[in-house]
Amino acid sequence: MNNRYMFLLLGLLIIISGCSEERSKIEQLTDDMPSKTIKVSATVEGEESGTRLSMAQDGLDVKFTWVVGDEIKLIFTDGINVVQGSTTVSTVSNNGKRAEFDVVIPAGSTSSTFDLYGYFGSGALSAITGEEAIANLPPAPWAATLPLLEGAELVMLRFAATDLDIESPEISVAFQHVGSLFKIFIENTSPIVLNGVTNVDIFTETEGAVIYAHQNNGTNTVKYDVINDLFIDGTTAFTNQLSFITSGGSDDISPGEVMELWGWFPPSQESGHVWPELKLRLNYSGGELITNDNKPPRVSPTAIGRAYHFYATYDGADLSFSDVYKQKLIDSRDMSQYNIVEIGNQTWMAENLRFYPFDVEVSDPEIESTTQPLYYVYGFQGDFEDPEALQIFSLSGLLYNWAAALDGEAGSGINPSGVKGICPEGWHLPSEAEWQELIDFVETDHGNKLKDKLWWEPTSSSITNEYGFTARPGGIRNNQTPFYSFLTTSGYWITSDIVSATGMRVVSIASNENEFTFVDAPKVYAASVRCVKD
Image 1 (cartoon, rainbow, N blue to C red):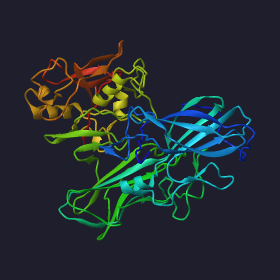
Image 2: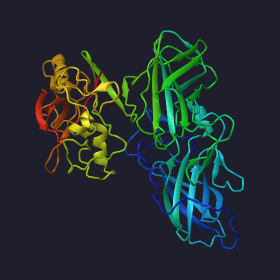
Image 3: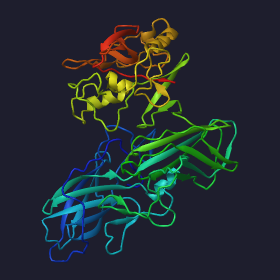
Image 4: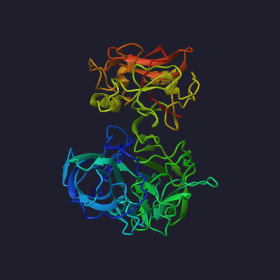
């Protein structure tokens, strides 16, 4: 792919599915039957949401494109024989997202079906008899500056297509990622130069804990079993750190500058392999700096096919983690970025929250609950390719019911609420009193001063958005058909206040109103969420 890769929030699905990938015998094919050529169409799916990475940055996104001539290593097996092969991309379409290539099925098999595995990335397939399905990964460091990471072509993609008819003229497959990208930002906010930075480490101080990511152990070439999607035991090591090196072995970070370091590592997906509490350590000519705070431990194994960003600032005295980079809030759970705005003594998200847990799906609008967390996208009826619903999701976020917004916590009416709820770390769900503080600060005509200039119907020249709060009319999910109502005409935001066992307090404003009001609503309704900084 000539160093153009894309990472996805969603799992990438194999289009062609079939029997088990386990194989017990490895032999070479004979020449009893002629070879056959089939056409393969390959995609990397799931681009409709989430953080996407390529080696050419666009904010937090990295765009992926196939390029004619990209080499793909192949493994064929008919259940008895395993044979290596390779091919190159011959045609690219759909803005570089779809690649086509021809696959020559080896001669000699008497089976009517076969399995096909493809691998894109650095390293070569093993030449050792009995290891035909093994890719030998490079021993070079798997973390460096972006150009070095690109040049090493470390990012790996794999597809598996099983139980294929040998007479098929063409098939479709989808590549999935084998690892994830990890990106470190170190911003120097001090007036002094950080001289001679050699490397930055992600590490844990938790006794006995390790970071469950495969990495080169410093002595052996890492071996990856393409058929079984496994890193071979004994060739990788789980340690208590991941190290990222600088380009020339020693770089400076001047005041106001940001150092970016990248790494590619395959996180273990085994149950119980949960990453511990993490710190950053920066090594430079003056010694070392260690963050004075920690990234909290994860609650589930770190996912594959995503991007994980670690932001830190150096103020001349301390190195500290930060969730804000260039006036953007970065939600470490899914790497979504949000505009933020300071109004009075409060710091607000200037966009509606888009986060929902990775292990749940967007809720069907006909399903409702006062106790089960539910996550809706306005207009979503089960079609994950619906462009209108996806646009609404991007611009207006999710609609959360009470249980989802509170995320298992009790409600609160004080200022500040103290209810983190569904908000990112360091942010919380505001109470009615906190919304009232915002309104009191803006004073007269506060609705028009806080509304987004776009999206409201009908539009009004009175809308100024002068504080940058950018309130949008995301509508609401109610409890009767057609379930979704008031998109472009009204906005509703859940507060942390409890009204009753079945009722909650909601902030609302309509297109024909110039002031926010507080109303009661059933907890089965779903509305937008804005978070405020702790």
